Image (tube, rainbow, N blue to C red; front, side, top):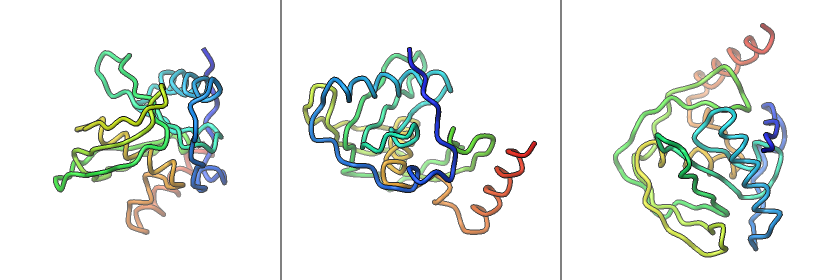
Length: 166
């Protein structure tokens, strides 16, 4: 088990769009395993490679109750998103100690390359959908708080800085 350290906001890697993955290699599989170990250690329901300093379009999501149903994704993209929204408190290990209520589509259809190198399409709902959207934001160099108004974002970042000094 290899738990990797999560980068601290505002590290440049967290603001830089990640690079496409052309081929699923043993190295990619190893990164996914480290990501799963890191996600489980948090504990969290998803992790994107840039969060641990790897600028590749890789993500893992496991929003199952019992755990152990992780989806490994390379180059995930949303093909369709529901009109109905869902609110959820979102946070990130890259900015510990703070969170915000974010509204995202309740359901999404996501396409990605799986661990066998095949293109896969999945319909995800609820926390699964929220997590995959959150991870894709990371892959695009965005953080969950980018969805907030400027005033709310500034307040959240001030709270995070204050918590960092405590």
